[in-house]
Image: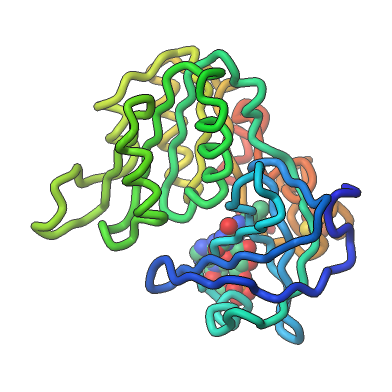
Length: 273
Ligand SMILES: Cc1cc2nc3c(=O)[nH]c(=O)nc-3n(C[C@H](O)[C@H](O)[C@H](O)COP(=O)(O)OP(=O)(O)OC[C@H]3O[C@@H](n4cnc5c(N)ncnc54)[C@H](O)[C@@H]3O)c2cc1C
Ligand code: FES
C-alpha cells in the first residue's frame, strides 16, 4: 500500500508509552502525513538485533498520524519491547492484511465480541462505528478478561458503557468482592444481550474463545457469512512471500488476519505449521 511504509521498516521513535496492564503496554508513534490504515490491519514491528513481530493497529483510523499499538509481553521480542520506552527507535512496516468490513455493516446491528487482548484490533472498529453512529443499528460490545485488573482500555470501556446508544457488557473469569459484574466466560454475555440473526458480528480473542463465540452466535441464528474473526499465526515476511503463516490454502498475513467465518471454519482448529 503506497500510503504505508512499504516493505522496508521505517525507523520511528516511540512518542508515548503507556502501561496498560502488568504485561501489556501501548505505544504511540507520530507518523508522516499520508499514512492510512483500515481497522483490523497490522504492522510488522522490528526491534533491532532481536526480531520482528506482527502487531495489530489499535488506534483511531480517523487519526492515522497517531499510530497506536498495544502489545502483550509473551516471548523473545515482545519481552524486549516491554523494556523499551519513549524515544527508543522501532522499525515499522505496514499496514498489512485484511480489514473488518465495517462499511458493509452499515444499516445493520453490530455486535463486537472481544476476549482479552482481542480488544486491541477491535478498538478501531468501535471508534469508527461510534464516529458514524447514525449509520448503524444497535451497537453491542461484549468484553471478557481474566480478572477486573486485566480489563484493557478500562477508562475507555467505562466511557462507552456510559453512552445511551451503546450496550457494553464486561465479564471476568475470576474476581474479588470489588467486582459487581458478571463472572464467567465472555460467551455468557450473549445470554444477557439481544442478538438478532441479522447482526454483523466481529469477534477477536484466543482461538478457542472465538470458536465458542461463533457456536453461540449460530445457536441464535446469526449466519456464518455475517461473522468475522481475526486469526493469528507466526509470521516472517508479512507480505505473502515466505509461507510461514499458511493456514490451509491461505496466508494469514495477506488473506487475513480478518476472515469471514464461513471461509475459515474448516481450518479454525488447524495447528500452526
Ligand atoms: C495479525 C496479528 C496481529 C497481532 N496483533 C497483536 C497485538 O495487537 N498485540 C499483541 O500483543 N500481539 C499481537 N499479535 C501476537 C504477536 O505477534 C505475538 O505475541 C508475537 O509475535 C510473539 O513474539 P515473541 O518473539 O515475543 O514471542 P515468541 O518467542 O515467538 O513466543 C514465546 C512464547 O509465547 C507464546 N506466544 C506467542 N504468541 C502468543 C500470543 N499471541 N499469546 C500468548 N502466547 C503467545 C509462544 O507460543 C511461545 O511459547 C498479533 C499476531 C498476528 C499474527
Ligand atoms: S508471513 Fe510470509 S507469507 Fe505470511
